[in-house]
Image (cartoon, rainbow, N blue to C red; front, side, top):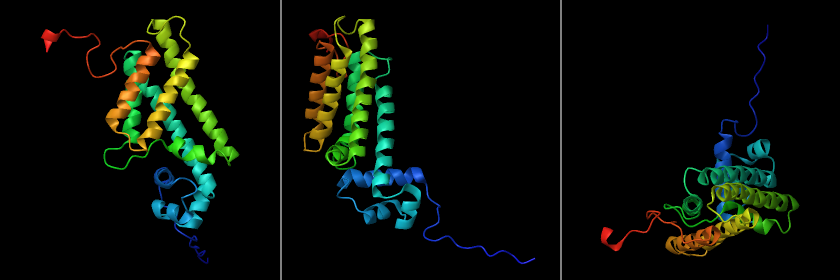
Length: 222
């Protein structure tokens, strides 16, 4: 019996972590934007040559759409987690904004803002698929916040006539402001002050949104 010859696969062997490759590709798009990122940049970031990239993810456009899908899914999960009902609405909203600021202004890297807003907003003008994904994502973010606001209204944390749909869009608008201004050099202190003001506007009260106790302390307690 003649042993069958084993042919070596062309290009780089598929010994890579697709999840890590997406992470690396996302970081590259995040820094330079879609138009400013080349296939060579993606190849260098992922450690995969062009044939391997095409085989695993398709072309540059296909890879970018996959990074968008991943970021959107992770963002919705993060919003749901931050707005969990284990704390009051003001604290939940501030938890959302504080976590967003940690992402937009990483301690060990340059300010980067939001991946979705920073890269998809410009591409949406000329790319129908990106425009669709961006619109669907923003509506999904609004809805995730709306669900928490409806619960807050039921609990009496919001006025009975409060409109969760409108307030959710305001909450999202604050989030987008943090994303954009973090890229323009605004300080974390300034951005957090904006978030606090947004929470007070949404909740209709100057409720506790910082790390202080919910009830104001008497001066003698200090």
